Image (cartoon, rainbow, N blue to C red; front, side):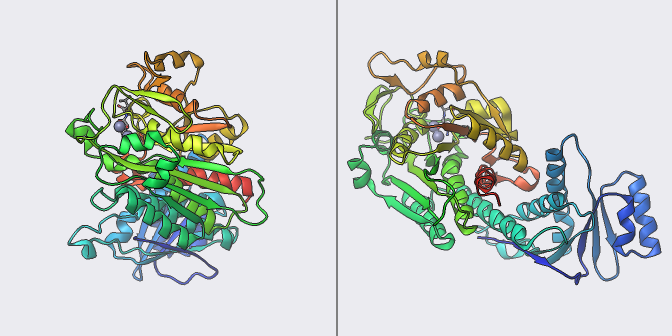
Length: 478
Ligand code: BES
Ligand code: ZN
Ligand code: ZN
């Protein structure tokens, strides 16, 4: 994994620095020469917010905090600005940069550092020229009176978790089979200190997880079901929070085969499982006093002589029969077994994350996460976290009217609705298997990007990690 160090320092000591200021009045505190000062003032007149001063000893990068319509949008602007300096930093082969908070705006500075750190991510392990292409920046030092050491540490943990989650999404099936994903999560558990159990096919059979087994029927690789647990002493909650992630390591569509263009990026279809593993990593590493469980049903989805065929009837672990009319609507089949499994914990609140429908991606693009659910208070809190970290939730209806679209002639339900409201019918399917407050997050839009989008990068974005970590942080109040 590529990584970046973020640490707090107490004394300015580098030639290459970034200063964060709130306006003209802070410029004097930077310590610029007369000429440099004149240059900066001129840039400010031109309404520049990001300014580069080339001193003889190095570079001073200046960011003037730009106030947007809301505080959340101002924070996002700071992340974008942090990312915006990376081109200059890496092209100058700078390895270490100091970020000095002259503005005394703690949250803005943290957001800026976050954008800088997240934007520096690369996935180049399969390239012969990886050594020459590696970004030079590897350390960010933060000089700020108002930001505590532990806040900086939490940011570092969060960035590491997003990196790990992106790595998992970016890994192709040639490496990341279901069993391998189990091993990777085990490694993450060892490193961060959370418990991981990987159920094999025999165990999955004994649990009668008919959804996961049906999707796996066409595969040469066995499925796994991963459980993760962070249960600290003195947790604030008596019942657990549970995160469930769709772990389709590759989605060909099965016999309802996807066309080539639609299939090419389908290594991303375990993005939900990647987000859950990343979130557990951050929560455990930060040792937040909250009991959290992660669940991930994992398999690939392929056509084969033995694959499930459109028209087959399968039985989910709670006994519900499903007529599988489209083998490409596989995510809901494996998730339903996981949602049933979650019932045994009597959870406080369950969130599932899944690259579930093209419909969600078409509706809102990469800009947010489609959310539907039955929870009330915690749904609002999750939305608040979404605004805080700029992984915004858009609530879609979960009206009962949509249930009729899932009626089957021969089984309890079928696995597809009509041509409309695809994200909702998928969620209505999942809702049947929930007996607790629940929210479903369809991350099909933001989880994987074909073109770079600022600090979110290109390829796997780690969508959902920062959202879940922030949500649990608010429970822990740190
Ligand atoms: N993994 C896909 C959804 C997806 C599409 C994720 C685009 C990321 C980007 C999912 O399994 C799928 O194929 N869904 C079908 C459902 C349909 C057959 C009811 C879809 O959205 O077309
Ligand atoms: Zn599919
Ligand atoms: Zn899928």
